[in-house]
Length: 374
Length: 258
Ligand SMILES: Nc1ncnc2c1ncn2[C@@H]1O[C@H](COP(=O)(O)OP(=O)(O)O)[C@@H](O)[C@H]1O
Ligand SMILES: [Mg+2]
Image (cartoon, chains in turn blue, brown):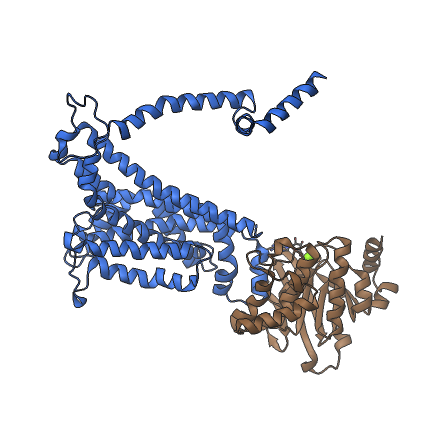
């Protein structure tokens, strides 16, 4: 009798107070859940206030040098030194790219954004044109814009001057754009009937996977000049780009292979029985399924690659993180808080980019599921 | 004694032969799966192949469009002898439709796209034309109102009918069916078998691996019994069921009729 009454009361409460009902159902549904909720609340209460104080309340928003961010009588515990970020911001974005030419970088960012949106928005118009733009027009346009083309009046900007977000984006984009097709080819080669092809693929994949990216970068930048005269050796950034692309493609090959394994033998047989050639079978039947299945892993690899781009600093390339490092070493800005602030900016940048990729992958998965294809 | 099947096709001019299998031997490693198969199928003929599981029925069928290769013997399909030559293999596959036990529809494509894929990419047909063609076959297999769904949304019987339509869209001269109904519930079996009976009435050459004895009686010109990698008996359906020649056939029939 009382049990029934109790249940009735609970239901009544849930119906009358939506917020409390929700809390009860989601955060306090069992003793263990309630305990976890309490622990989380305590943790937030412990971390959040000092963080908010540091980042916002005590933060220094403007100033021309370290003095603004040092402890003083007026400000015994100065917070984040946003003044530092403000002054150095354009360096973080463009590196040492010449002032007068930075519009070219802006234009590149715009062109890239257009391509990314066009391709990633699944119901965008004319996505085939979008793919052509992204994979053919955009690389050429980017090269002309960033590197320069004296013929049409764009001065050449040596890559040694490139830096910041620009370099991070270029390295990541090149890595992604090349690693996927190369990885697919390697994965197919690894499953090929031809022993020589298979052996090459296995050797390449296993060698690259057995070596840290740092080693690949060192090899690309230090060992290459041993064989090729420095004068003829490709540009330093280009060497790093090749290293990153090859490195990422070995990992991508294994990811794609996982997807290929998930496609049943019957799919190959049906495609072959219809008279499709090997490449059509792969391109139209097998790969779309394999890549769909393994999409989360592909995005994971992209996210890893994006963060790995920070390693190009070991061969003297000024990527985004390296520009922050350089800026915080500036004696004009030496203050206890500038370093932390710089790293907060870096963390925020990498987090926003990686989280964005991750969310996008989820939404595509959900869309595939809704379409009833899984 | 090996029963040779040439007898019923004897004297037929070569142009009327759809499939000819001569002295076919195949091993999977050490396992001797096809032992001296000889078979001549006339154009328009309907053959039902039955026999216990593991007897090599699927393997034989899959040799006819070279999904499997073999160690000894010859297979000639519509006058084209199958060799290593990829061109010949593709020529034969374009001419031979196949329907599988587990449908093997492409799950990432809609029903209509499943049907237009090969006409567009193998026959280089314009998309509109391919869609019109696909629609005529989808109407024939009675799926006209589901063409924009993905296969996973259809019942097994519907999926198998789409698979038949997909194969027909290549306008094949020969259709191979490998246990097309054995993955289906009884009521769905019927809708697929009805489709196949209609197809048989059109005069297309059919080789069907099936244990549907009603279908065999109704449609088959000849029934082949395979066991242990050998063709044990070839007979007209009436004789096959009513007075089988071989003890093994009798045993098998007794088993499946119970
Ligand atoms: N790829 C393969 N490798 C090794 N053995 C196989 C393979 N495919 C089939 N077999 C074997 O060959 C025999 C005949 O198979 P199958 O032609 O599928 O028989 P059926 O269709 O008559 O049931 C079976 O014993 C099976 O285990
Ligand atoms: Mg079988």
